[in-house]
Amino acid sequence: MALAKGVARVVALILVGLAFVVVGGTIWGVCASAPQVNGVAPNCGPGPAAVIALGILLILVGIGVGVASAYSGPRTIYPTMDPAIPPPLVRPVVVQETIVQQTVEVRCRYCGGLNPVTATKCSSCGAAL
Ligand SMILES: [Zn+2]
Image (cartoon, rainbow, N blue to C red; front, side, top):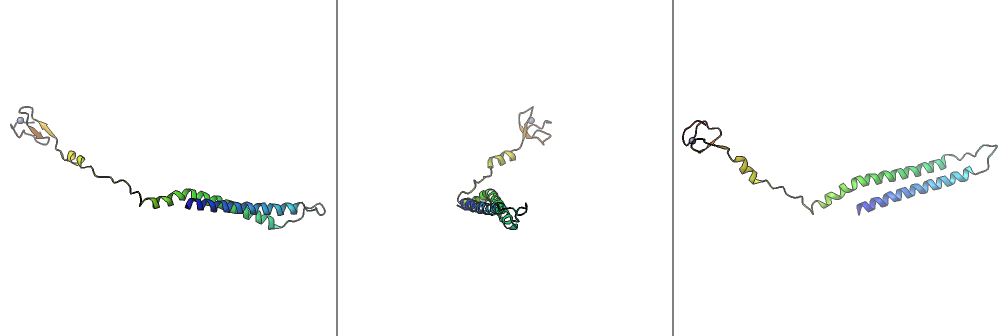
């Protein structure tokens, strides 16, 4: 709904701008087609040019608003959807913790007993590891 309203506002701005340009161009055209005086075109004054400039400005503003709403539109829509759709929960993996806590052991080459890698002597037979 917000996006459609923004598009309507942009279209309205551009249409009003086009109307200003058309009106200004028509006035300018009528003035320029007036009979020349001593070979010099009649002075139309700043009026028509100002109207055309205002129309172009309105069109540019309309385009600018359209571009701005196109970029900011999706960002304004997402927050309204977030409460309805909660993000997926990332659960801590407990299995990995048990693997990390597991001690690395080495097997004694004489008796086959398991000993921690930090041990220098076998806990079963006392042989040097
Ligand atoms: Zn041993």
